[in-house]
Length: 383
Image (cartoon, rainbow, N blue to C red):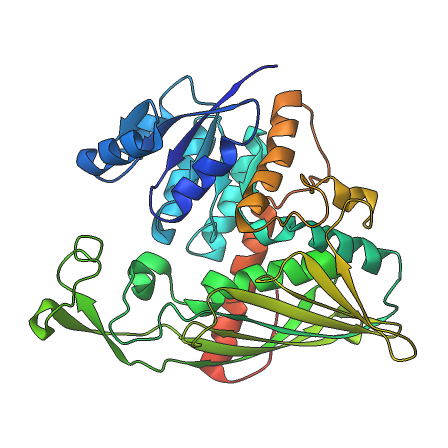
C-alpha cells in the first residue's frame, strides 16, 4: 500500500482534530505542521509527535515529500494558502470558509479544476452515518414530497461578554460570524441530504453584545485564573451573535434556520426536522446515533445507528457495531477515508462523494446573499 504524506497548517482547535483523524487511516502519515511562530510550531510538533515543523506555511508546501495539505488556519488565510497549495500541485483539504469572497472562491474552483488535484472543503457533518441514511431514504421517496425543513445550530461558547476569540474580528473571520461559521454547516447538510437548492433567503441578524471584553493577556496562559478589569479592553462587535433565515427552496419547499452562539446550555447542537407527505425525519448532532421518524397514522420510531439496520451506503461510514457510539471525531475520519481512497487509487471522478471547492463556493454565495438580505431587510434571490 502506497503511503501518503500529509502536512497540516494551523494548530488551534481544529488542526489537531485533523491530525488525530488522519492517523486513524492506515496509509496516511502526518509528517509536518506549520504555525505562525517557530516556538509554537515546535511546541505543537512535540506535543503531537510530528517530524517537521515550520513557522511559515510556504515552507511546508515546498516540502517535496508532502502530497496533500490540510488548511486549518484562521479564515482570512484560507484563500492564499489554498491558492499556494494548488499552484504547487498538491491536494488540498480546506476548512470552511473556502475564501473571503465569492470572487476568490470562483478563482479557487477554476484553479483546482485546472490543476486536476483533489480538493475538499471540510463539511464533516455530512459524515455522521445516519446522514447518509437520511439521504438514501429521501432519494427512495420514503418520506414523500418534502413540504418544509426547519432547524437550528445553537452554541453557548460566546454567552458572556468576556468570551473572546479571533472569530469575533471581521478582518480575521469575515463579515458574518454565526451564519458563516455554523450556519454554513446546516445549509450544506440540508442541501446535501434533501437534494433541494435554496433559491431565496430573508435574514434577520442580532448582535446582543455591542462591545466585548478582549483579554490583554493570553487566555490559555491564564486559564483558570480570574482576570482583573484592567486585563481587558473594550472591543466593538460588528458580527452577529444570532440570526434567523427564512428559505424558499426549489419545488416550493419552505424552510427556516436559527443560529445562536449565546444559547445557554447548548454546546454544539445542530438539529433539523424535515416534514414530508408521508413521514417526518428529525436529527440532533448531540445525540447523533439515532434518527426520529414520525408518522401520522402509525407509530413513530427511533432508528439507531447499526450496520444491520441501515442501507449499504450508510454502512460504509460505520466502523463499529450497533450500540457502540460514533461521534464528531469519526466524521473527520470517514470523510478522509473517502478522500484518500481516491487519492491512493489515482482515479478521476466526475461526481466526488465528498464536498469539494464547488460546495465551498456554494456556501460563500449563500452567505453573501444572506448578509445582503439582512442589510436591506428584503427577500434576495440566490445567484
